[in-house]
Length: 165
Image (tube, rainbow, N blue to C red; front, side, top):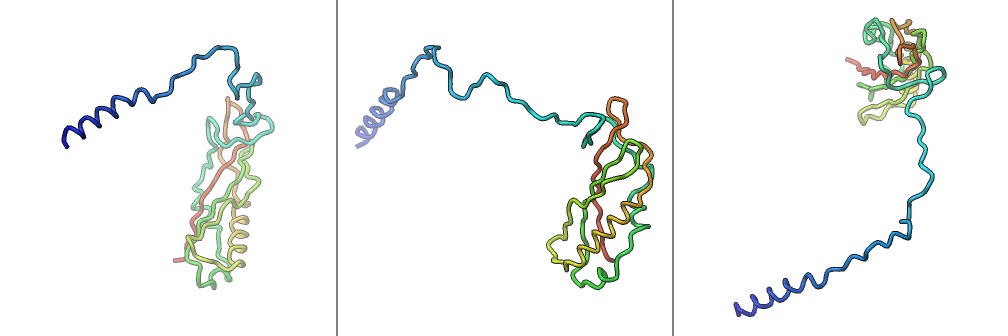
């Protein structure tokens, strides 16, 4: 029995190279499928310095003041928000543009994350409205972003954690 298994093992392992496919030599006359003569074009990663707004600059914009302290000093919870029993905390991501003169423009709420709690629609609307009000009051920054030594317009994302204690 032992010799039977050994002989079958040798027979099968010895015949495996016979089952392999042989490679066909490339004749060089046909062009492989998928190759084209026109190279692909890609959109530039950063817009031009005069008209565009960049996400990453060589030198980022500097506020010159504590943004968290500014928001805390100017933010007031609307009474309807305080009455919502589900509201404990929320994280709001605000995006705005720091202009070439270091002023703030185009303030937008990019994301409102409640951590799984379902808020009343009125609560979300009032929180967004108050955040936009506070951010639009933000003073000019100390300096704008710079690219190649020139001041440029740049995006800035600011996460705000609002919590009732």
